[in-house]
Length: 301
Image (cartoon, rainbow, N blue to C red; front, top):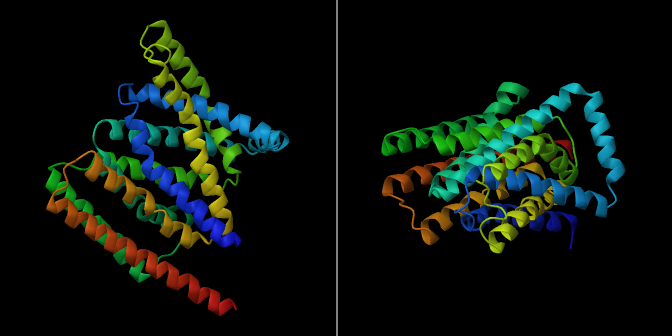
């Protein structure tokens, strides 16, 4: 099997994992969302550090930490990224366990287009006419949903915005996925441990106080977080960025289907119309990007 095929499979399974995440978090819906987040941070740190040790990357991790400390701009960018992704994780867990699955799906459909806008603002990246039209079409869909809901779809927008900001902060920092997750969770670890101590001292902790199944699910959340990230890194190393961008729509599509079919969340004709507009925008955007990359490839050949 070629490296590109391996990359496509790795990326597909990474996004499939992320799309199916609601099935896992629903098993913990009896646990407060904040505690699930704290547990996820702590056990992600534990398992990624173990992975670093097992795969013989201890020296690389120390080198990463030394590099970040000597490059304060990147150090604080990564610290900011770790706080933003923690907020994103919390929003996602809260939304899943409060029956907002369709809105989380919307957030991750909007995210790529929002990331492109931030790329134009912060990195002076350029868009062609089709890509600007696609972005405008998606914006119309959000307006339709806002009118339909009677309020702004804040959950979707905050999920999209937080993940897009995370991407901006991490764009210039090149770190291995496993070591990167270990360092990112390290930034949040003191807050997570401190809050957990508070929960235990006030008898509000679910961990070790509900049942063994809950304890195991909370511990395994660290592995569940790390595995798709490692698969994503393998995919990103072996396939072009435009192809990776196209595959990412697997995740919100799976989440949308789970929300409608398994959890029977309401999905009106207006919402179907709005999502159809977003799908059309994404097809236009992705198609124009693929054509653009191929033209550039032919010119350089």
